[in-house]
Image (cartoon, rainbow, N blue to C red; front, side, top):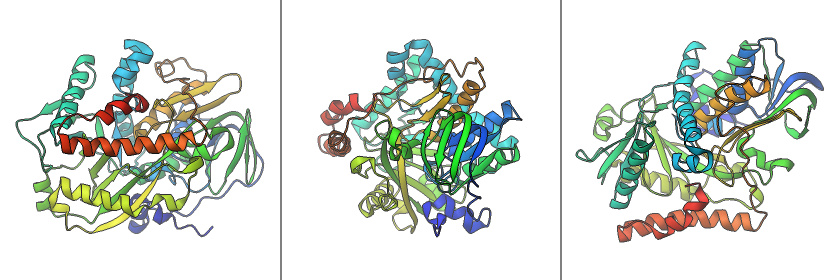
Length: 457
């Protein structure tokens, strides 16, 4: 195949560099096959689903079908936040599902952060999991207003434990204060996704790599290597689902890009004020996110790459020099000690955005087709909740998970081109304008208010 999977991200490169995982592809599907459950996609949604199916029913025959290698997509490229974040806010969830539904969803997300820690511990998956919470800096008056609003929302619902500190400004330059949310763990996503794949194999499941899925229907998945017949089919391709004929308008692939620095000194980290296990962000509109890695680097990312016509996904879209430079400057602006740090890795990839910014885990008992996704970048933990939920749905259980309001949620489809292209790139432009507007006026952005209904808020 000739693909150097080390180039996919810092996370996969570090696995290969340490000798922990050479990333050599597993065998492809050897031909036609019959199983109980066929799973399309070897990322965390598919692998967690396989894991929990095998845990619930040890005799079940599960095949995971992956075009590249396990963790090639968003699961091996993300920021390493195992958080309780859900793309729709608690207020938006209440509007759509009522108070009890919104609270059940929030509790399930918070518990999922701990569940990932429990399972990785039980399975011996050393993925640098450390639950240190998230710090979000407020670096202007409008950002501080958003921090106060988030804290007030958490207090109103009484489930999330978000606190705001303004008497000690915090380690980021220009910070007026910061919020702290304990419901987040820092981890190494490459170690996690590759570790879950091995756990699936230990439990008797099979992961077929280098096996491209071309089409699917009830009880059947057509691949480049043969047809898999199955009682149930699980669609777990996230942003890559947009490249398959049936998924083209269900999800929009939006690129998020990341950089990693060289390891920093202990003195630098003391000055920066971020502990091991902590993740960080701020309250700008054009999202940024970062963590202190186990080996003392910054892994730092953000949006800013444009959407590509026809929901196309290509490897060259993973690298946009202007966005990498924006990230480097943003990191140095936040934490001046990083200004001279070498950037050792640059990477990116598509995440999946549903039209209403609302993730789902779904199952149709008539066709026995399940699907999950639409995480809008909050997938590292949500994939685990999806895997448990789909395992319950496929095995016919009635549980707290199967009654959660995201089960069988249907998002509207995205508009056809050219409306999709114009709308999504205008949205990106509006977030950039909103940040610039707030820097200049020091007041809450009008552009952001106009865009709010389009981003699930």
